[in-house]
Image (tube, rainbow, N blue to C red):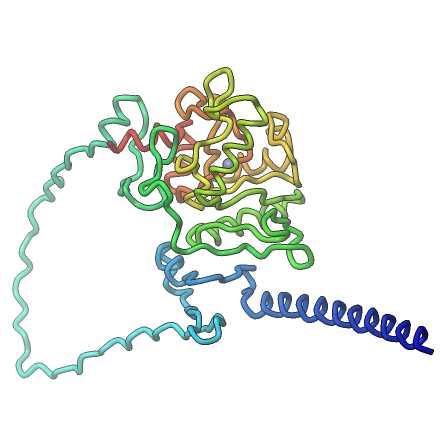
Amino acid sequence: MKKRHSAARIIGGILFTAVFIVFAYISCKVAVHSSDLENCEDTYLYRVYGYDRNRYLRNQGREDELEVDYTVSDETGEVIAIPAAAPAAAVVPEAVPSAEPVPVSEPVPTPDPTPAPTSEPTLAERNAAALGLPAPPDLDINDWQYVLVNGDHPLDPIDYAPANLVYLNMTGDDTDIRTGYDGNRQVVDAMIAQPLIDMTQACKAAGLPIYLSSGYRSYSEQAANFQRINANNGISDGKNNEGHYITMPAGCSEHQTALCCDITDYYHEIKNDAIAQLPTVQWLAEHCADYGFILRFPTDKRDITHVMGESWHFRYVGVEAAKYMTENNLCLEEFVALYT
Ligand SMILES: [Zn+2]
Protein backbone atom coordinates (compact mmCIF):
# COMPACT_ATOMS: atom_id res chain seq x y z
CA MET A 1 0.00 0.00 0.00
CA LYS A 2 2.80 2.36 0.96
CA LYS A 3 4.71 1.35 -2.18
CA ARG A 4 1.72 1.96 -4.43
CA HIS A 5 1.17 5.27 -2.72
CA SER A 6 4.69 6.51 -3.32
CA ALA A 7 4.64 5.22 -6.93
CA ALA A 8 1.48 7.26 -7.50
CA ARG A 9 3.20 10.30 -6.03
CA ILE A 10 6.20 9.85 -8.33
CA ILE A 11 3.99 9.43 -11.40
CA GLY A 12 1.93 12.41 -10.29
CA GLY A 13 5.10 14.44 -9.87
CA ILE A 14 6.36 13.50 -13.32
CA LEU A 15 2.99 14.32 -14.88
CA PHE A 16 2.88 17.67 -13.10
CA THR A 17 6.42 18.55 -14.25
CA ALA A 18 5.64 17.54 -17.84
CA VAL A 19 2.46 19.64 -17.89
CA PHE A 20 4.37 22.55 -16.40
CA ILE A 21 7.16 22.31 -19.04
CA VAL A 22 4.65 22.14 -21.90
CA PHE A 23 2.72 25.09 -20.47
CA ALA A 24 5.88 27.15 -19.99
CA TYR A 25 7.07 26.30 -23.50
CA ILE A 26 3.77 27.30 -25.11
CA SER A 27 3.39 30.52 -23.17
CA CYS A 28 6.99 31.47 -23.88
CA LYS A 29 6.56 30.85 -27.61
CA VAL A 30 3.33 32.77 -27.70
CA ALA A 31 4.87 35.65 -25.79
CA VAL A 32 7.81 35.90 -28.16
CA HIS A 33 5.61 35.51 -31.20
CA SER A 34 3.00 38.03 -30.13
CA SER A 35 5.58 40.58 -29.08
CA ASP A 36 7.16 40.20 -32.51
CA LEU A 37 3.82 40.92 -34.13
CA GLU A 38 3.15 43.91 -31.94
CA ASN A 39 6.51 45.44 -32.61
CA CYS A 40 6.88 44.40 -36.18
CA GLU A 41 5.86 46.80 -38.90
CA ASP A 42 5.35 45.65 -42.43
CA THR A 43 9.01 46.43 -42.90
CA TYR A 44 9.88 43.60 -40.48
CA LEU A 45 11.67 45.94 -38.17
CA TYR A 46 11.80 44.79 -34.62
CA ARG A 47 12.15 47.79 -32.38
CA VAL A 48 14.37 47.28 -29.40
CA TYR A 49 15.03 50.65 -27.91
CA GLY A 50 14.75 54.01 -29.45
CA TYR A 51 14.71 53.03 -33.12
CA ASP A 52 13.46 56.17 -34.69
CA ARG A 53 11.98 55.59 -38.11
CA ASN A 54 11.11 59.26 -38.38
CA ARG A 55 14.74 60.19 -37.84
CA TYR A 56 15.68 57.79 -40.60
CA LEU A 57 13.00 59.16 -42.95
CA ARG A 58 14.05 62.74 -42.27
CA ASN A 59 17.64 61.77 -42.94
CA GLN A 60 16.54 60.35 -46.29
CA GLY A 61 14.51 63.48 -47.14
CA ARG A 62 11.26 61.46 -47.00
CA GLU A 63 9.34 63.77 -44.62
CA ASP A 64 6.08 63.04 -46.44
CA GLU A 65 6.22 59.48 -45.10
CA LEU A 66 6.44 60.48 -41.44
CA GLU A 67 3.62 58.74 -39.68
CA VAL A 68 4.24 57.53 -36.22
CA ASP A 69 7.11 57.68 -33.82
CA TYR A 70 7.93 55.15 -31.16
CA THR A 71 9.02 55.21 -27.60
CA VAL A 72 9.48 52.61 -24.91
CA SER A 73 7.34 52.78 -21.78
CA ASP A 74 9.42 53.12 -18.61
CA GLU A 75 6.82 51.20 -16.66
CA THR A 76 6.08 48.22 -18.84
CA GLY A 77 8.95 48.20 -21.33
CA GLU A 78 6.39 48.08 -24.12
CA VAL A 79 6.96 49.83 -27.42
CA ILE A 80 4.37 52.56 -27.84
CA ALA A 81 3.48 54.34 -31.05
CA ILE A 82 3.21 58.11 -30.84
CA PRO A 83 1.51 59.98 -33.67
CA ALA A 84 4.02 62.22 -35.41
CA ALA A 85 3.45 65.91 -34.83
CA ALA A 86 1.02 67.17 -37.43
CA PRO A 87 2.63 69.68 -39.74
CA ALA A 88 1.70 73.22 -38.77
CA ALA A 89 -1.09 74.54 -40.93
CA ALA A 90 0.18 77.05 -43.42
CA VAL A 91 -0.79 80.56 -42.41
CA VAL A 92 -2.50 82.25 -45.32
CA PRO A 93 -2.26 86.01 -44.94
CA GLU A 94 -5.53 87.78 -45.44
CA ALA A 95 -5.73 89.58 -48.70
CA VAL A 96 -5.50 93.30 -48.07
CA PRO A 97 -7.34 95.28 -50.71
CA SER A 98 -4.90 97.73 -52.15
CA ALA A 99 -6.17 101.24 -51.75
CA GLU A 100 -4.87 102.72 -54.93
CA PRO A 101 -4.00 101.14 -58.21
CA VAL A 102 -0.26 100.67 -58.45
CA PRO A 103 1.10 102.65 -61.34
CA VAL A 104 2.55 100.40 -64.00
CA SER A 105 6.12 101.36 -64.54
CA GLU A 106 7.83 101.15 -67.84
CA PRO A 107 9.61 97.86 -68.30
CA VAL A 108 13.30 98.36 -67.71
CA PRO A 109 15.43 96.35 -70.13
CA THR A 110 17.39 93.78 -68.15
CA PRO A 111 21.12 93.94 -68.69
CA ASP A 112 22.85 90.95 -70.26
CA PRO A 113 23.15 88.18 -67.69
CA THR A 114 26.60 88.14 -66.21
CA PRO A 115 27.97 84.64 -65.74
CA ALA A 116 27.95 83.54 -62.09
CA PRO A 117 31.45 83.61 -60.69
CA THR A 118 32.80 80.05 -60.70
CA SER A 119 33.44 79.00 -57.12
CA GLU A 120 36.79 77.67 -56.09
CA PRO A 121 37.00 73.89 -56.39
CA THR A 122 36.70 72.14 -53.05
CA LEU A 123 39.57 70.17 -51.55
CA ALA A 124 37.82 66.92 -52.52
CA GLU A 125 37.35 68.13 -56.09
CA ARG A 126 41.00 69.11 -56.35
CA ASN A 127 42.15 65.80 -54.88
CA ALA A 128 39.88 63.88 -57.23
CA ALA A 129 40.98 65.89 -60.26
CA ALA A 130 44.62 65.18 -59.43
CA LEU A 131 43.80 61.46 -59.64
CA GLY A 132 41.84 61.88 -62.87
CA LEU A 133 38.54 61.21 -61.08
CA PRO A 134 35.23 63.04 -61.60
CA ALA A 135 34.05 65.51 -58.95
CA PRO A 136 33.11 63.59 -55.80
CA PRO A 137 29.80 64.22 -54.00
CA ASP A 138 29.64 67.35 -51.88
CA LEU A 139 29.28 65.87 -48.41
CA ASP A 140 30.55 66.16 -44.85
CA ILE A 141 33.05 63.36 -44.50
CA ASN A 142 32.60 63.53 -40.70
CA ASP A 143 28.99 62.32 -40.96
CA TRP A 144 28.24 59.03 -39.23
CA GLN A 145 27.95 56.91 -42.39
CA TYR A 146 31.51 57.60 -43.57
CA VAL A 147 33.29 56.62 -40.36
CA LEU A 148 36.54 54.86 -41.21
CA VAL A 149 37.43 51.98 -38.94
CA ASN A 150 40.40 49.76 -39.69
CA GLY A 151 43.64 48.49 -38.19
CA ASP A 152 45.08 52.03 -38.22
CA HIS A 153 41.85 53.78 -37.21
CA PRO A 154 40.39 52.18 -34.08
CA LEU A 155 37.07 53.36 -32.76
CA ASP A 156 37.06 56.24 -30.29
CA PRO A 157 36.38 55.27 -27.58
CA ILE A 158 37.79 51.86 -28.36
CA ASP A 159 34.84 50.11 -26.67
CA TYR A 160 32.29 52.27 -28.53
CA ALA A 161 28.76 50.89 -28.63
CA PRO A 162 26.06 52.31 -30.94
CA ALA A 163 23.16 54.03 -29.18
CA ASN A 164 20.41 52.77 -31.46
CA LEU A 165 20.52 49.10 -32.31
CA VAL A 166 17.64 47.19 -33.83
CA TYR A 167 16.99 43.55 -34.37
CA LEU A 168 16.04 42.59 -37.87
CA ASN A 169 13.25 40.15 -37.36
CA MET A 170 13.24 38.45 -40.71
CA THR A 171 12.77 34.81 -40.03
CA GLY A 172 10.92 32.33 -42.06
CA ASP A 173 7.25 32.63 -42.79
CA ASP A 174 6.95 36.24 -43.83
CA THR A 175 10.17 36.93 -45.66
CA ASP A 176 12.13 33.73 -46.03
CA ILE A 177 15.18 35.80 -45.22
CA ARG A 178 17.28 34.12 -42.57
CA THR A 179 19.41 35.83 -40.04
CA GLY A 180 22.09 34.36 -37.91
CA TYR A 181 21.96 36.02 -34.53
CA ASP A 182 20.16 34.64 -31.54
CA GLY A 183 18.57 31.98 -33.72
CA ASN A 184 16.62 34.29 -35.96
CA ARG A 185 17.69 37.87 -35.55
CA GLN A 186 20.48 40.10 -36.63
CA VAL A 187 21.46 43.38 -35.00
CA VAL A 188 22.44 46.54 -36.87
CA ASP A 189 22.36 50.29 -36.29
CA ALA A 190 18.83 51.63 -36.68
CA MET A 191 20.02 54.02 -39.37
CA ILE A 192 20.90 51.23 -41.80
CA ALA A 193 18.03 48.87 -41.01
CA GLN A 194 15.67 50.03 -43.72
CA PRO A 195 18.24 50.11 -46.56
CA LEU A 196 19.46 46.67 -45.49
CA ILE A 197 15.92 45.32 -45.51
CA ASP A 198 15.24 46.90 -48.91
CA MET A 199 18.39 45.29 -50.32
CA THR A 200 17.68 41.86 -48.89
CA GLN A 201 14.07 41.95 -50.08
CA ALA A 202 15.20 42.91 -53.59
CA CYS A 203 17.75 40.09 -53.60
CA LYS A 204 15.10 37.65 -52.53
CA ALA A 205 12.71 39.05 -55.15
CA ALA A 206 15.42 38.25 -57.72
CA GLY A 207 14.96 34.62 -56.70
CA LEU A 208 18.11 34.31 -54.61
CA PRO A 209 18.39 32.94 -51.08
CA ILE A 210 19.88 35.37 -48.61
CA TYR A 211 21.32 34.97 -45.15
CA LEU A 212 22.38 37.78 -42.83
CA SER A 213 25.32 36.17 -41.14
CA SER A 214 26.85 38.81 -38.88
CA GLY A 215 25.91 42.40 -38.05
CA TYR A 216 26.83 44.20 -34.86
CA ARG A 217 29.54 42.78 -32.66
CA SER A 218 30.42 44.37 -29.35
CA TYR A 219 33.99 45.12 -28.31
CA SER A 220 34.09 42.05 -26.10
CA GLU A 221 32.53 39.79 -28.74
CA GLN A 222 35.17 40.94 -31.23
CA ALA A 223 37.91 40.39 -28.64
CA ALA A 224 36.72 36.79 -28.24
CA ASN A 225 36.49 36.36 -32.04
CA PHE A 226 40.01 37.68 -32.49
CA GLN A 227 41.37 35.29 -29.89
CA ARG A 228 39.51 32.29 -31.31
CA ILE A 229 40.49 32.90 -34.95
CA ASN A 230 44.10 33.56 -33.97
CA ALA A 231 44.19 30.31 -31.99
CA ASN A 232 42.59 28.35 -34.86
CA ASN A 233 45.17 29.67 -37.31
CA GLY A 234 48.26 29.58 -35.09
CA ILE A 235 48.75 33.36 -35.29
CA SER A 236 48.60 36.20 -32.78
CA ASP A 237 48.20 39.43 -34.79
CA GLY A 238 45.10 38.49 -36.80
CA LYS A 239 47.04 38.53 -40.09
CA ASN A 240 47.69 35.86 -42.69
CA ASN A 241 51.14 35.24 -44.09
CA GLU A 242 50.62 37.98 -46.69
CA GLY A 243 50.15 40.51 -43.90
CA HIS A 244 46.40 40.96 -44.48
CA TYR A 245 43.96 40.83 -41.58
CA ILE A 246 41.76 37.76 -41.44
CA THR A 247 40.28 38.98 -38.16
CA MET A 248 40.37 42.47 -36.68
CA PRO A 249 41.56 43.36 -33.19
CA ALA A 250 38.70 44.53 -30.94
CA GLY A 251 38.05 48.24 -31.48
CA CYS A 252 39.22 48.01 -35.11
CA SER A 253 36.32 46.00 -36.52
CA GLU A 254 33.60 47.66 -38.58
CA HIS A 255 31.15 45.24 -37.02
CA GLN A 256 31.47 47.25 -33.79
CA THR A 257 29.92 50.25 -35.61
CA ALA A 258 26.84 48.16 -36.56
CA LEU A 259 26.96 49.83 -39.99
CA CYS A 260 27.81 46.63 -41.87
CA CYS A 261 26.63 43.09 -42.32
CA ASP A 262 28.19 39.87 -43.55
CA ILE A 263 25.79 38.37 -46.09
CA THR A 264 25.80 35.00 -47.82
CA ASP A 265 23.13 32.68 -49.23
CA TYR A 266 22.90 30.45 -46.16
CA TYR A 267 25.03 29.58 -43.19
CA HIS A 268 28.65 29.05 -44.11
CA GLU A 269 30.79 28.13 -41.16
CA ILE A 270 33.90 29.30 -42.94
CA LYS A 271 33.77 32.39 -45.11
CA ASN A 272 36.35 31.98 -47.84
CA ASP A 273 37.11 32.97 -51.46
CA ALA A 274 34.52 30.50 -52.80
CA ILE A 275 31.76 32.72 -51.41
CA ALA A 276 32.50 35.30 -54.12
CA GLN A 277 31.10 32.80 -56.65
CA LEU A 278 27.68 32.52 -55.01
CA PRO A 279 24.91 34.02 -57.20
CA THR A 280 23.56 35.83 -54.12
CA VAL A 281 26.90 37.49 -53.40
CA GLN A 282 27.38 38.38 -57.08
CA TRP A 283 23.91 39.97 -57.15
CA LEU A 284 24.76 41.94 -54.02
CA ALA A 285 28.07 43.15 -55.44
CA GLU A 286 26.25 44.38 -58.53
CA HIS A 287 23.30 46.07 -56.79
CA CYS A 288 24.48 47.04 -53.30
CA ALA A 289 25.33 50.65 -54.24
CA ASP A 290 21.69 51.25 -55.20
CA TYR A 291 20.89 50.71 -51.52
CA GLY A 292 23.85 52.66 -50.16
CA PHE A 293 26.16 49.71 -49.48
CA ILE A 294 29.67 48.97 -50.69
CA LEU A 295 31.67 45.79 -50.84
CA ARG A 296 34.04 46.98 -48.16
CA PHE A 297 37.06 44.71 -48.67
CA PRO A 298 37.54 43.93 -52.37
CA THR A 299 40.39 41.54 -53.06
CA ASP A 300 42.12 44.05 -55.34
CA LYS A 301 42.25 46.63 -52.53
CA ARG A 302 43.93 44.36 -49.97
CA ASP A 303 47.11 46.42 -49.92
CA ILE A 304 45.13 49.54 -49.00
CA THR A 305 42.53 48.10 -46.61
CA HIS A 306 45.08 45.60 -45.17
CA VAL A 307 42.19 43.15 -44.99
CA MET A 308 41.96 39.97 -47.06
CA GLY A 309 39.25 39.96 -49.74
CA GLU A 310 35.86 39.58 -48.05
CA SER A 311 33.17 39.15 -50.69
CA TRP A 312 30.51 38.85 -47.95
CA HIS A 313 31.11 42.06 -45.97
CA PHE A 314 28.80 44.93 -46.98
CA ARG A 315 29.09 48.36 -45.39
CA TYR A 316 26.56 51.19 -45.47
CA VAL A 317 27.86 54.58 -46.67
CA GLY A 318 24.72 56.06 -48.29
CA VAL A 319 23.70 55.89 -51.94
CA GLU A 320 25.65 58.92 -53.17
CA ALA A 321 28.99 57.80 -51.76
CA ALA A 322 28.38 54.13 -52.60
CA LYS A 323 27.72 54.92 -56.25
CA TYR A 324 30.76 57.18 -56.54
CA MET A 325 33.03 54.59 -54.92
CA THR A 326 31.67 51.73 -57.02
CA GLU A 327 31.78 53.63 -60.31
CA ASN A 328 35.34 54.80 -59.65
CA ASN A 329 36.63 51.61 -58.02
CA LEU A 330 37.57 53.25 -54.73
CA CYS A 331 37.60 51.61 -51.33
CA LEU A 332 36.53 53.58 -48.27
CA GLU A 333 40.13 54.44 -47.35
CA GLU A 334 40.64 56.03 -50.79
CA PHE A 335 37.26 57.80 -50.69
CA VAL A 336 37.84 59.34 -47.27
CA ALA A 337 41.32 60.43 -48.35
CA LEU A 338 39.77 62.61 -51.08
CA TYR A 339 38.22 64.79 -48.38
CA THR A 340 41.19 65.11 -46.07
ZN1 LIG B 1 32.41 41.26 -41.78
